[in-house]
Image 1 (cartoon, one colour):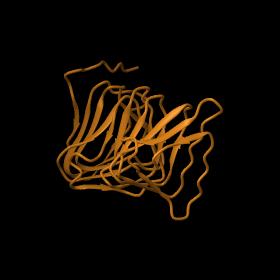
Image 2 (cartoon, one colour):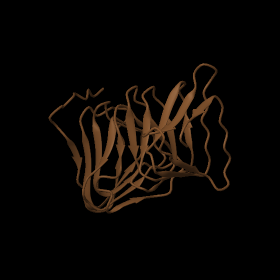
Image 3 (cartoon, rainbow, N blue to C red):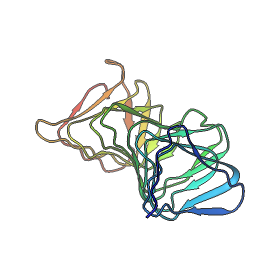
Image 4 (cartoon, rainbow, N blue to C red):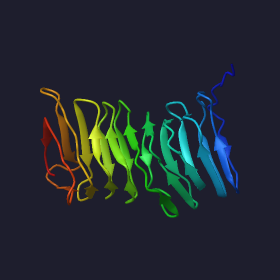
Length: 218
């Protein structure tokens, strides 16, 4: 029966520096920014973790393990510290902003995961992967998705049509599979950030299945 109020000038900070600390929001949504910042600490989600659209989750120090749970946040950023991120087997829904894992990427370890990062904003958004290995990246919102830097993905997919996926010119995205699909009259546009300058989509042996896709400079 608890009510969680908003806090535009308040940040919820998890500071544990030892042990594995379980977090279960019991179906509630935090309406504040959230920071994980504890050298040597580990936080393990035991229930779905949700903060409101427009609110940022920042991982600065310690280990954040989604433990198979779904995560819903406004945007994701890194602080300057030593941190480990385990996406897990659930879905991370990025509701309103960027997934920014390049600024302060020094000290970041991304654990192997089988889940999905779904970029769901209806406005333009970016996935900045810091050159790391990521699970499936999904274009899940009407706003154009730009993928920055050269990264590795299990797959790149989409769940909206029409949709735009833009690769930064000159980069290489390495995938184990590639599966995007539009519909007649509602194409998926696959292009680069600079017309006439190519980007590379590289797959050495996975399954690629595309339909109703407009491709330029790839």
